Length: 262
Ligand code: NAP
Image (tube, rainbow, N blue to C red; front, side, top):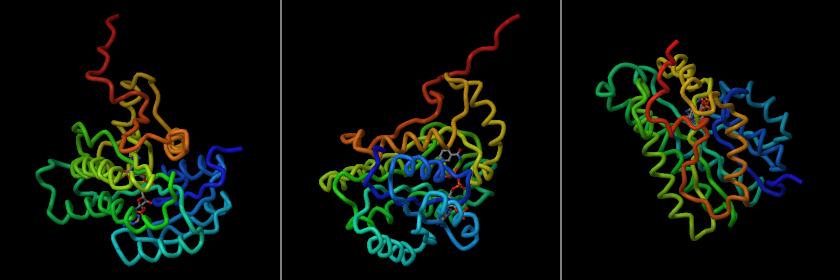
């Protein structure tokens, strides 16, 4: 029997089979969770529907998280379809490509607003919309990155957004604590996804990551999925407001290993 048997998980942010949301969906399905999926908009439907079918998911709803009306509709539909919800996954981020290049001080007001709205505020908005439907013992989870804490060249406004997302995770954990619902974040190492492709210099950074990380390996969406299962299961019953690194240990390093002399 899977450790999520009897639980319902609603996953936001599935774009394709490379998405972190897909790694999480598969891992949760494998552990017995009943899955609901939400994706950004019509353009993705063709890719998302077959993936949903592969995990026996009949609840597949579009939702642009920058629109309160979309969020309200999907929350009402999910409530009607599932009754209570145990797990809410936020695996969404967006910044205009031009903002992920050049100096951070060139960030435009509109670019800053967009990144914060879609990558941070949407987690707060989803938490509020689903608050009436969350079952005691449930969990919410979002995806963050090390650029929240340290400077990652070109990550720019997304780093600032991820800092705000991690802070939001703590405030939400405080708000939802009395309801018996936990709120955590996973800080994932770099993974080749659609969103990552928008970060300038990502390929080099991805390669260097494996050279510097203690485990000397890149991570996969499967790794993130397994950690998500743990954090959203009863095994993590008293863990809330935390950021869990799934990064082959990269974040513990201060400087890279010096090159060995022949
Ligand atoms: P992804 O497959 O491109 O997923 C990002 C998702 O966000 C896409 O489904 C995207 O839809 C969706 N999205 C963007 N704007 C939206 C909106 N207005 N409404 C609803 N959905 C919207 O990339 P990913 O790497 O798996 O990203 C998932 C999460 O992991 C993000 O929070 C990301 O920052 C985080 N993360 C990624 C990495 C990495 O290296 N890949 C590392 C650490 C953390 P569209 O395709 O339509 O825009």
